[in-house]
Image (cartoon, rainbow, N blue to C red; front, top):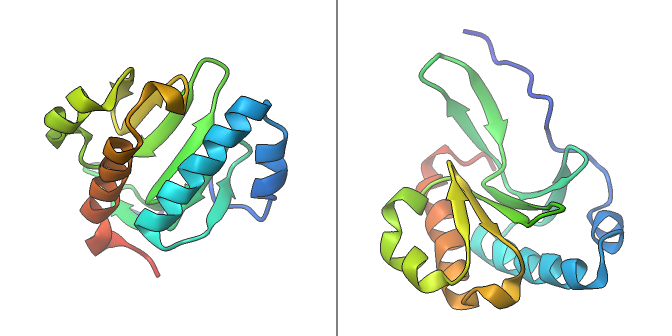
Length: 140
C-alpha cells in the first residue's frame, strides 16, 4: 500500500509564536514540557499542523498497510487540558502513572490540566520511555 498523506504534518511555522499566543500559565507549562521532550529526543521542536508541537519523527506501518511519518513525542495546549503524545509505554507504565498525579489517558495520549498537578520527574520518565519505544523506527 502506498504511503498515505497525513493532514497533520511538520511545518515551518514558528513554535515560539505559537507558544507566545497561549495564556501566561499555559505558555510556561509548554516551555517546561518542551525542555523535557528536547532532552528525551535530542531534537528541536517543530510545529505539526496548526496546534501540535512535536519532536523528531519516526516511520510507521499500520496493520492496514498504511505508512507514514509522525513525531516521536509532542504536545498540544488545548482549551481543557494539555495533550501529551507519548505514543508507546503508557500501557506498560501503570506504576509510573500511579505516581504521576492528576491525569487521564487515551490511546497514546496523556492529558493533564497543568504541570503543577503532576510529578515532573515521573513525567520526564514517561516521555523518555515513550521515545525509547520508537527508537528502532526513528528517522534521522
